Image (cartoon, rainbow, N blue to C red; front, side):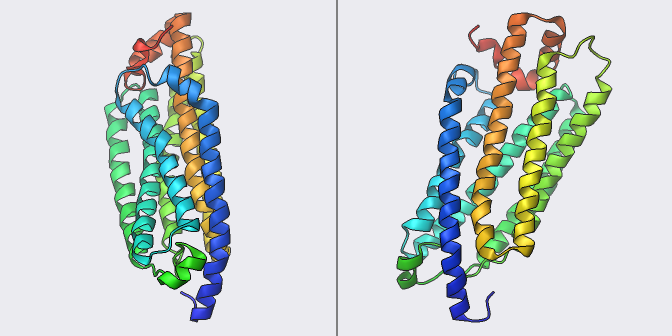
Length: 294
């Protein structure tokens, strides 16, 4: 919390400019990513059966439009204090659930790599509960600590909280690293355990490992940058980077699913024995591949 009302107002005006830039950048990324991948979505996702993978994909795919649009609305065109408080809380919970959905996609991918191993399933479920319950609790605590400007100030600043300490938020982002780190460790362990299971690793398996590693290190880099900004950077800069990070997180996990479907479809058409064996053993991630057109 700032030492004086005047300092609060200065911080608020600085946050406003950066929040606008961040919200606009996030919405731009959402629209661009959708435009360049919608053909793959139509051909690989829409014709498939309903499954946990498909539900997670669609939630992860379309929730960023809500977050991006709401974030831009909050930073440009909202002048009622009560509405500001409600919509800001909606955005905070929506963004958090969006991150959780994206991480669930990586968990399902890991469960598939381990050929539906029950021990891995229970480990991921318990880890998710131990991680996401505290995250949602901390987000609730953070939102209750916020103060909002009155309607007169909102006409000049739009909906930006007057005081928003990042001490809670950086802990939230750090907690998000727990399931993602567990996923990458399980992926690496499985990679070494199954190295001798196939005469030649099927392309779909290589893509699972490749996309998982790239997604993890990209997300790790973004989260570390965000935490660093929260701890040592100006509060205004922190507000700018959070929404783009959530959007990029979603886009990366979208690519994981689409690349996985492409590889599974190509493997089915190639009819490789190793590929078909891996697909059948990893049924949870590919149960809807059979309905896709050849």
